[in-house]
Structure formats: C-alpha cells, structure tokens
Image (cartoon, rainbow, N blue to C red; front, side, top):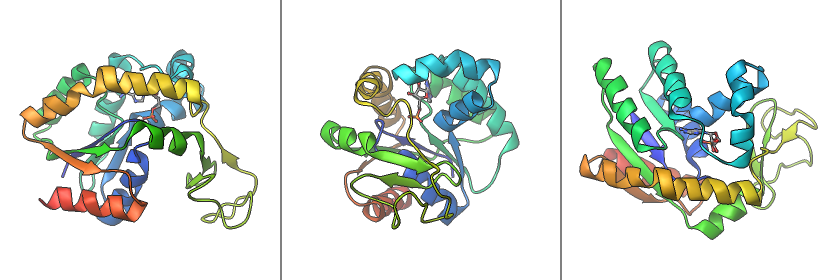
Length: 215
Ligand code: AMP
C-alpha cells in the first residue's frame, strides 16, 4: 500500500509515519528528513538548501523530486508513506508518473486536519533526541528524566529544528496554504482523499488513520 500523509507543519505526519513503519513494515519517505541529512553530511545540495529551509520556504521541485526518485529505486517493504512530499502540484504530477513507471500506484492520501493555533503550540515546543530521533514536547511529552532520552538513554542530546520558530513557522504555514493545499482538491478529484481529525492524542489519530486506510 502506498500512501501520502498530507497536512500542515506540525500536523503529526512524521509521528504517525513512524507508527505505520513500526506496525505495518511500511517505508517512510520524508523529504524533510532527506534534506536535513544532506545538510548534516555537508553535500553541495545540502549547503544550497540550508537557508531556504531555515526561512521556512520550499526547496525547488527539481531537488525533492530527484530525492524521491532515488529512494523509489532502492527501498521496498510494505509500501511507501510519503511524508512532506508532494508539496506542490508539480511534485504530485511527478510522483504519479514515477509510481506509474514502476507499475505501482497511490492507494490513499490522508489529510490530517489541525487548526493553526494548535500547530503553533505543537511546533514551538517540540524537540527530538539527536541519537535515536524520538520526539518530545515541552508540554505534551516531556522526558521522564530531564535531559535524558526515555528511549535510548542518551544524555544531553536533545535538539530543536532551526525552522521551528514562530517566524519560519508562519512562512511554512503560508507555503502550505498557497502551494500544498491545492493538492486536497487534486486528490479528491482522483478519489484518493481521506480526511481525518489530527487534533487528538497520538493513539487517537493513529486509530483515525487506520480507519481511513481500511475504509
Ligand atoms: P518538513 O520536515 O517536512 O517540515 O520539511 C522541512 C523543510 O524542508 C520545509 O520547510 C522545506 O524547506 C523543505 N522541504 C521538505 N519537503 C519539501 C518538499 N516536498 N518540497 C519543497 N520543500 C520541502
């Protein structure tokens, strides 16, 4: 099964993708994670996109489509979860063509609906463990022992994304409404769209997604 998790920054796409990977053996393809990895490893492309990402703007279609095309060749498993991709109509067209060229198709597009105020609260409080990637939040999910990761016990390794500040978030939200939200109509017209409430607890949202994928 190949699915897209669609939603604004902070909707919980990454969190829910991790669950689907653990529970269904699916493969998560997050262009945001791929771009951050390119920055850390200091590739030419990584340097090129750094300022764009920190400002909360979209990286070019060419770069992200290239990243996804590479991964579709190498990865397999219980299907793909596209997380943070596509973000423009051009990317959506390219994804359709790429899947078709591999004899595959898209099964569902899950739109995670969360209102703007909740997004700001979620994003400005979030941080992750730099060792294992476990996600935390200042209000909703604090580590049991301050400064130590619940999952891997790493100490002092928590980090925050440079674009998780209010100004960059505003730009990211506007990019979502302007460039990405047209995909809602695009996939509705293709009869792929499933809309779910993304506002509840992680388990509740996961149950909504399972229901949407089963239905
Ligand atoms: P994310 O982790 O999905 O929130 O992405 C972080 C940042 O990476 C975004 O704000 C963009 O600058 C860039 N990015 C990630 N995915 C895409 C995409 N599909 N198209 C354009 N830019 C992207």
